Image 1 (cartoon, rainbow, N blue to C red):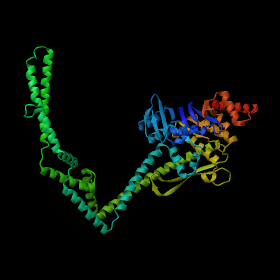
Image 2 (image 1 turned 90 degrees about the vertical axis):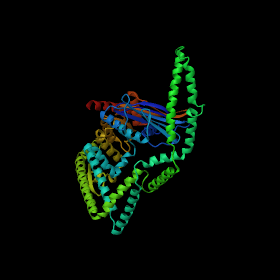
Image 3 (image 1 turned 180 degrees about the vertical axis):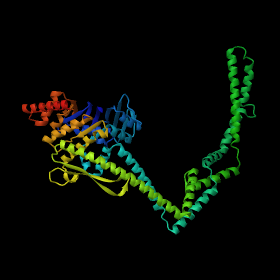
Image 4 (image 1 turned 60 degrees about the vertical axis):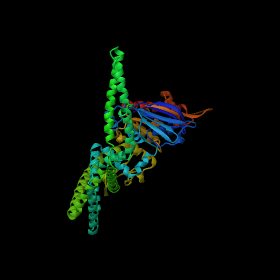
Length: 561
């Protein structure tokens, strides 16, 4: 769950830190107090879009940090697959925001934005104000169903996608092989020429690298040979002024005093060892010098061979291995073209087999989806009844796609009727904004255990509802919070009254400017905030009593559950 939120220097936020709790965390506040800024900060930490205008005026940087506790073994396994491991049972996501750039970290280690988003998707799910609009796009309906259908459907989807890829390869192979006789002969002629050119070159794998080394050595051979020769003269040349000669003289001089004391013997021994090392060095230097002995004829041969290899590289590959692989591909292609009719029959048979396998996988996936859809729709329908859709009809209709896709042959869409006697119609043609929010809430409630995301955030999911319906939505939020941590930004007292932890967001101004603060309310403070939500500026004693009754009703609901 989300344990801690720390925000610094963003919009109206100077610096705030919030400790969240298990269950239902409610955030309320006046319009413009900064509720959206707070949620926006969370989005930024999870990899949301950022621009420098989000920084607080005068600030050089902004910071958002989220601390999550990780408890489920399954979640730890998924994080481990991303090479992320909790430290003391916690995952810390942070993002430092500066002009024109940002730095993201997980547990103090800098990570890519892609990895940050992947990790965040396992820890938290945000249902924003306009997310219910995704219900207007039927492609999302199938995604919800697949999520509900679970591991079996996921496995069938992987099999179907793999079968689709194989089918596509065979289909493109057949399309690319459709040649008339003239085209076939032309391709044969070109392939024969290319194979002949490569084979006549007699290339050896790794030869190009060896030639490059030889060529570079030969190009710098003269200068290198002169340097080696000079070094050899200084260390052991024929002249009497070389290092080896001087060391030998020094050894003879110290030989006379080696028995005087321990220090004399030590110095003598060191000099003998130096002489031995220098002799070894001179032998290696002499061998190294011999390796640079070459003739102009050898240089000419290496240069020509290197030019030949590089010429073939410009045509057939960046390395000798790639050139040889290309030659093998062309030989295979020649074999196919020379026995073209049999080759085409083989490709057609491969395509037929691949298509049969795809259809088998796709049909099995479709059956699994339709079976899961019956239970999925039934649970959503019950959820809608709980959310005060008094006479709702809800179903999912399937149509078969005309073209194969990696996700199967199904197209699915939610159909709905909210009034008695009305025919079911596509959801987008029936539901209002407020109704779509409730449908999405019902779906989220059904998927709560399927998604396994420990923290859910709902941003003003109460848009367009009031009265009894608001109470039903509140109960549904309370239900979801039994199995997940829920953070909910709301303006309705019915929902706020269900809080396990109630936070008030306020905007404060003084001579230094305006800033947003957040505080966790005690029981009586929460009741006062509920009364404000109920009565606005004119909070009477009766409104306070109503707020108190709402809190008491929540405690009764807790006892029942």
